[in-house]
Image 1 (cartoon, rainbow, N blue to C red):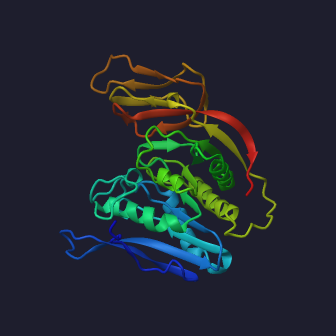
Image 2 (cartoon, rainbow, N blue to C red):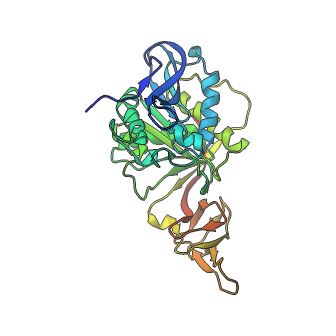
Image 3 (tube, helix red, strand yellow):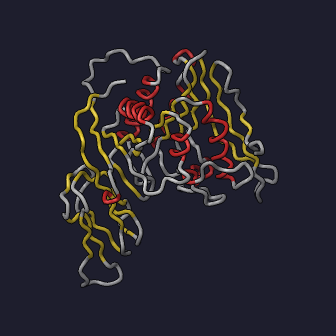
Amino acid sequence: MRASPIQPTVDFNADGEQHGFLKLPHSHDGSAWGAVMIPVTVIRNGEGPTALLSGGNHGDEYEGPIALAKLAGTLKAGDVCGRVIIVPFMNFPAFRAGTRTSPIDRGNLNRSFPGRPDGTVTEKIADYFQRYLLPLADYVLDLHAGGRTLDFVPFAAIHLLPDATQQARCEAAMRAFGAPYSMRMLELDSVGLYDTAVEEAGKVFVSTELGGGGTATAQSVAVAERGVRGFLQHAGILKQDEASGAAPRTTTLLDMPDGNCYTTSEHDGLLELCKDLGEMVERGEVIARVYDASRTGVAPVEYRARRAGMLAARHFPGLVRIGDTVAVVADVLERGIPVAV
């Protein structure tokens, strides 16, 4: 396979703190010999494990970019044992546009793996992560939120894996992230996911969903920042925080065991959510109504929970289209699990 056209302006093997770019040549109407310049920070201090931290896989999700941009500006080589590679704006064109997919090729980076070095801009970014960055990493954290069309209770997430040892290592890292909720997440279609690429490479992988609505809150950013530190401490890259006297944190373990967790709209219209995030629902209970927005006097369509559990995710805008996910109901497996690295 041909080499990637992306060239880093940093040396991944050099000690110290480096701030540079992953430079991807891109010729377009506005710049004949232009480039997509994806910011990257590398912080290395001797031998030790490597953590690859990314945000902005989707361009309208902001907790990851904020937390990682702050980390890149404050973390020093003396703070770490090993190496941290930080890419706050993974799909940089999408991030600049504030959209889920790239404005250049409409590519969804999180559905583009393993990518192609001779493909679209999005496929070239995926290929570089697949063949050049993932082999460097022992621990991988990809920070997501709901973007403009979904909202979530704040959780860190892993998937069920065929390798029990890898599964246990991922679960331990998820708990160390210390989000208010920790999810064993079911993907309805895992083909092309960055998650799948990382897991198939045998790495310890944790993802997140930390809010949504196309914005970030002080609370959701705080969850991301604490989580990144917990993840790095668990990996042995960052020293443990000194005891601060703060109350011990806990997480609630959630599970998405099957497709009945998802409620999908079969209508276009005005959406009324009948439950708030974090509330418990019973099987068969009305969780949403969709109203015909083209006329009055028409009874709404009711959507009922297909299983009992907690409302973990919801459609965000007030208007919904056929095929949109309206709600996700997850099983509550265990509450009050202590957060420890």
